[in-house]
Image (tube, rainbow, N blue to C red; front, top):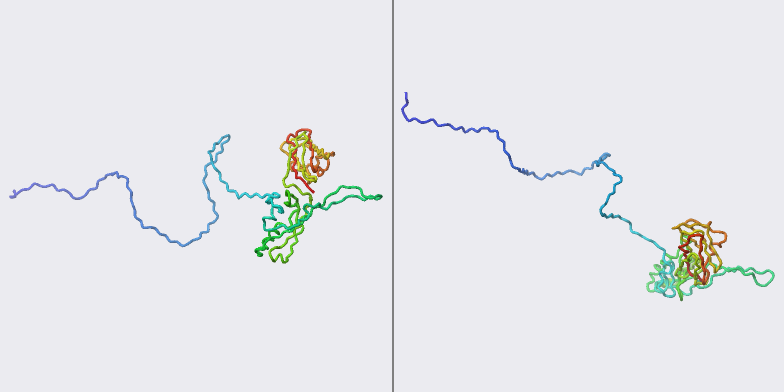
Length: 359
């Protein structure tokens, strides 16, 4: 039986419950930022004692290629070197200023223009040294047989006066400057002494053998007197400027010694040369060598010391019997004519180096 009343159509019912769907989404690139508080770690000081260990490094294989030319670009190498120091002996007379009365002792200047005066007189400088008279008395008549005379060593006496009169407290400093350069040397090598008297300066070589110094009233006043006694084993006084000349092979050449005494030259023969012969025709003295000096080598003849060396080695045995002793091959006072010959070679000539000598 039908119900009376209004009738409605059934409405569809929509479900509100979600459903799961399988789906893939492509997201763009993105960055996640995380905020962390600063990390602070406090630790005590710790010393760790490690046992012996080995570190291993990995290197590529080393390959060597032979017969290969490498072209390097321009480069600069930097090297650290210590400071270069060169010590040379003082040139005799270099300290002189040209004023008369100055003394240059191994590079130290005394006299005019310095704080150390040179007092007069200066003994033994220009005077003739003591002479060894070799004359032999004749037994049955007056007089003696003549013999050659030889000069003994030259003894030079100086008196120096350091001047500290305006400030006597400086007297010791000035004296000490003199003492510092007049001590006893460690070798027998003589030192240069140059004195400028009236005229050109002259040169001798010697060593200090005495140094009197009296502590008197002048010392207290800042004007002490220091004595110097210098013994010059070679009594000759030499010209300050060395001289030199080359004697060509097979050509007579004149050499001059402007002093009044013979001087000993230093002679150098550069190779190539075979059996060289040197002759001083003025004195009729020769040096002949049975030797071959190769190209690039030098035969050095030191007539003052009486030595002959080839490339630094002793070559005295090369002297032949017709020569004079090496020390007798001198340049006489005045003019000398020298000749240089050889069996072969000798185109470089013979180099002579000497100083004028005076007694």
